Length: 338
Image (tube, rainbow, N blue to C red; front, side):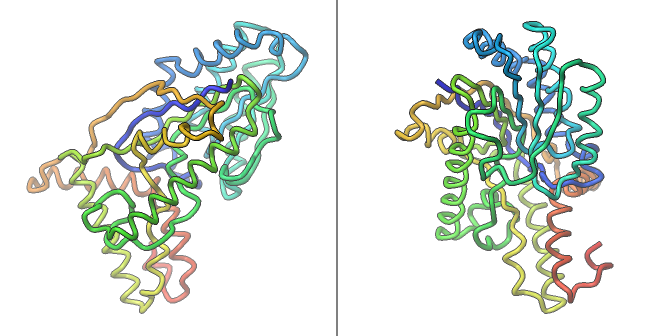
């Protein structure tokens, strides 16, 4: 029996799995999420449970494979990998461990290997590698992964299925999203989640565990989320204004972020189906951090602080995505993009 997926609920902003030089500086959300997992040892405890239940396999000469999906440059996850290696070392001092990391081909793999090389220097019998490609495809061979994990990545969809008006995010500003668009985005998120699970189901060894921490969405938005909604609209209006200024309105469909913050019931839905009956979902942890946008926007100082924080987040979250799209439109000058 393969264990299922744990989720960490979170209400705002997403992590772009594409690379940017400011990624680590502006990825506080990811760092906080991983810090919480390190402190609670939720992955380490799950790993120990898997080893104890599969002792015969663990004691064999076969290497132990740990896979990460959506690794980015590895700067945020190297501490988790270190904790997992240390956990394996409590059971065997010489067990060969293979660390395999996955991200899109556009990721900075040079920096990824630079970060992973610290683990090679710290531990013996540890080997590292990578596979480039979308995790909506099968990445690793059948039944090859002992322990897999993914932080803050599965809210990214394969594509943005349609334009959504005044918002970059499909489930912010739902009152502005017409019902047909809402249905299209919800279906895209549902199909992508099923595809992700189907691929991981093939890759995991019998008894293996997979953990994902993902941004969740409340059924009803809280007051503290209204500010990010306003900022979201300002960003979208800015892009639309530039497109219209250069007579490029037909490109508006490129700009919704391919992101969906799923509700808990949407995450658990596939596990009710027969094809996933041997996958078991467990909610390992759930926590909510206050949105850093809970400011009184009538206060000039508070508004300036909001803009400062959101600009930093945008550089890490949306910047690389928007830049890559804008640069495909020849009519828009580079200075305007900047």
